[in-house]
Image 1 (cartoon, rainbow, N blue to C red):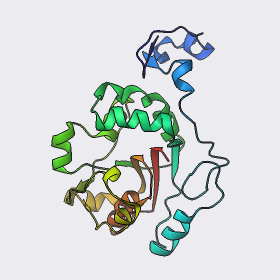
Image 2 (tube, one colour; image 1 turned 90 degrees about the vertical axis):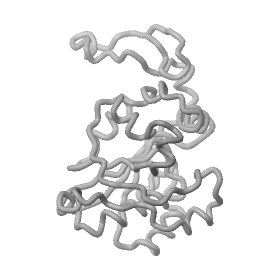
Image 3 (cartoon, rainbow, N blue to C red; image 1 turned 180 degrees about the vertical axis):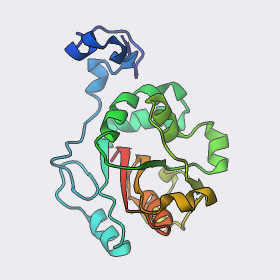
Image 4 (cartoon, rainbow, N blue to C red; image 1 turned 180 degrees about the horizontal axis):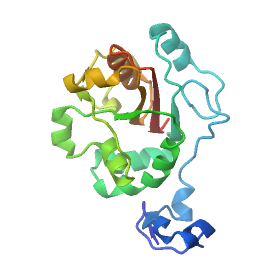
Amino acid sequence: MECSWCQIFFSREVTIIELLAPWRIPEKELCPQCAQRFTVIDWQSCCPTCGKKDTISCSDCLFWAKTCPMIHLQHRALFAYDQGMKEWIHEYKLMGNYQLRETFAAAIRQKINNFDYDCLIPIPLSAERYQERGFNQVTAVLDAGGVKSKEWLDKVVDTAPQAQRSRKQRLEEVQPFAVKPEATVEIKNKKLLLIDDVYTTGRTLYHAAEALQTFGPQSIRSFSFAR
């Protein structure tokens, strides 16, 4: 089997389920060495509001409770945003290594299945950023995992990459999202699940939730690859 991160071939034992259903055997997955570079977040011990690893409550959650009291995302993430994940994000997102979209596709699909939702909505890129990168890093992973989503948001304001902005600048960012006209009647009473690559301050996801909240969804939750 080929490692989905380092592309080195390795062997592993086939599970009973895979033996009975060989079509479930992935073409690629992390080799044991690469898997050690990433820290899976335990959802039982993370912050119940934002999903931060090994946290009961945090300053981010207190800030958003005051700033957006009507929105309750109950965010969850797959991995901690530590060195291993930062290296993967840099190579995939900033360096444009499109092949890496498959690295966590199966794991992300499995985690998404734990949510009760009607519509999965990825965070969009601005037209300028999409032209520059050539792909949306979130929808590319969803497509690789065979996960259906609804692109109901447009990013109408182009913003600088987060790495180029301070925390204060991120939190003061103006609303960059707009709901697509054809989606406004579809949102009412729906359970929405937002998905992004990384949750840092939460500003992006709360902006997206604010835009969607206007049209009366039943609930909005969120998920990211890393927190």
